[in-house]
Image 1 (cartoon, helix red, strand yellow):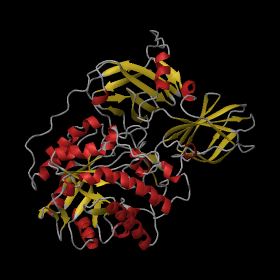
Image 2 (cartoon, rainbow, N blue to C red; image 1 turned 90 degrees about the vertical axis):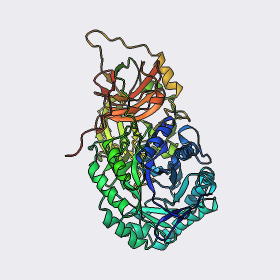
Image 3 (tube, one colour; image 1 turned 30 degrees about the vertical axis):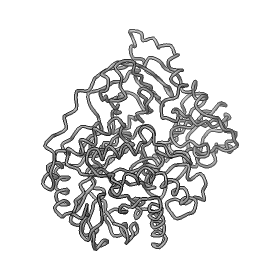
Image 4 (tube, rainbow, N blue to C red; image 1 turned 135 degrees about the vertical axis):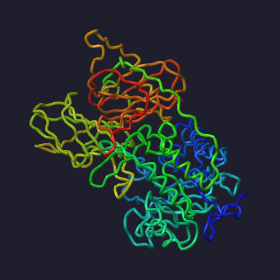
Length: 602
């Protein structure tokens, strides 16, 4: 069997120096029918390895299960890596960051406040033990030592950036995780990965494991810092940041291809190994995007294009060609180039069947009743929306919450009143002077994926007050739009199909609509072709195509389209369902010629 080892200065593959030129591709951000295409393009760029995180909450939303069906089929993904003649680097966390909801940690872990977050607390370690055992069941048989593609496995992730505490306690936690991996049959080299500064590398590494660093510029300086912390062994940039992620309400990030090329050239010329983060970003389908909160909560966009060498829809970019040319100076690159993508169908789709959300909401979850409002976590709602209801009186005057996580649409007897909003720190709103049914539709816009707020609950936090009293007598319903396989529930699709098409008079062929509402339409197109869905004139919500959740849209930008993977599209009978929370100026959506990722910062 092949041997992969950590040498005095280099990685050694079968006793020969080996420079890793890898790219990040997260299988859970790409439709599984497109894995082979993306991996082939990685090889054509000149990469010899693929790195992927494993998102714990993707495989184990509930304790006692480790799902490997469909988009969770890690084994199939690693086998496809091997089929392309490449190696794999696996990063199972348990925490991954990755701008992924909760940093990959299942929300269920922290319903008990005594459970530790990213520390050697017995309950947290017991949960990791179960998770690592399941991961190893897939990864261990695919290690290079067993004839598979997996070269290395990471322990934790950027741990030096998290929290405080004595160094010996932090190292004890890391050593405990490393011992778990070894106990479950992981025998390839283990490593840690931290940002390339002295503080993070000191706090997040172990002397007995390979230390790698994350950076995207100032190559010579960063490698010198890494060498101070690792006097011998190969140097590796585990995350060469060739782009960046986007947040709702901000600009689209881009990086100059020539700057990327220059820094990569310096890195490879120094003999260091590299992992491009990202090679292909993909998409935060469904409710999977995370958030950052450094005083201001910022949710991550649905698109995870990342300005990467391979665009969100799999097209090679200018950066792809620039980095490929650099790589060709250091290793053989295939002569073949990926073909450019074919034309994208353009259509206008009327959504002529509409059902108010209230008409189906009662069928989407069990209603919980109590004196105080529970959090989303209290009712096992790990993503999406929860409806809170209570009665108010004419003299209540104002609604005040301690905190909302993350956005609450307030209505009275179905009439929109105001918004509670975490990003703008809006926790008090005026109420009409009348008695009625108060409803707050709270949206979890993504669990924090970085920093001390990892593991916090979602929903309405703390007691709710008005001008006259504490508001009690709550009815709370988690709105579960998807079945266990992720597809849109039949309760929604049946109600929409049964709705009468709305007449479109000549004077108003594209009638506006008010939310919260579900709207439905159908279209015919080119089977298997990628599409880009634009919702110009719509405000905020979620879209499903053929029962697959594409994710969130928002007029706040920067992203202006949702990517529709070709494998979802049929020749006829394609269904679009849109949940619009506020309102749309017209009842149509457009399938457009290409992605609209938004304005960039000048």
